[in-house]
Amino acid sequence: MIQSKFRTLDLVYTAIGAALIAICSWISIPMTVPFTMQTFAVFFVLLLLGGMRGSVSILVYILLGAAGLPVFAGFSGGIGILFGNTGGYIIGFLLTGLVYLVAENLFKMNLWLKIAVLAVGLILCYAFGTAWFYVLYVRHTGAVSLMSVMSWCVFPFILPDLFKLALAVLVSGRVKRMLPGLS
Image 1: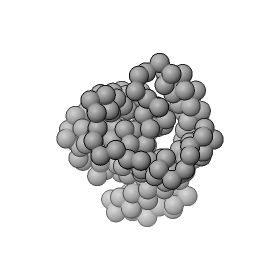
Image 2 (image 1 turned 180 degrees about the vertical axis):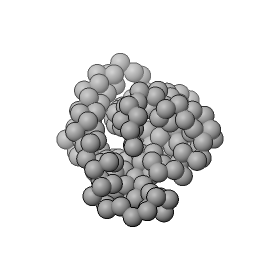
Image 3 (image 1 turned 90 degrees about the horizontal axis):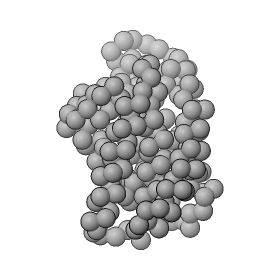
Image 4 (image 1 turned 90 degrees about the vertical axis):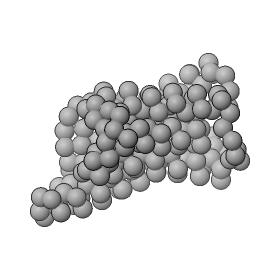
């Protein structure tokens, strides 16, 4: 059941979640779409905080970046990043959170279902981000095949993102036991 009000502890955890995503975005290897630890942080925050607090953390992270704070990869920020070629992947993180939130409210979530839901969320993030990238790239640069865009923006990330998902599962389970107010 979705609560109508956040408690103070919820706000604190949400802020920490947004900060963690920002910090993980700074761990970056520059490429067409940079390799970052953002996906780890998104998975971790959702597993640790749950769908509501985790999704709000992702939204806060996106809004901080849109406002110009340097929370995105490469210490960048601003609405121009969100409307740039890779902005669809950042917005796609919110889709991952919303899928997780919906699943939490529809199903009794065990570990395997959580992993499956996060994998579906990742696929949606890839799909949205790749479509966004493709449209902007074609508009500004010219025709390119979808397979080329997939080879730049998706294929190199699949195994690292699955590793990040596994790492988030391991770490979140241990951390969750140590923090008050998380169920």
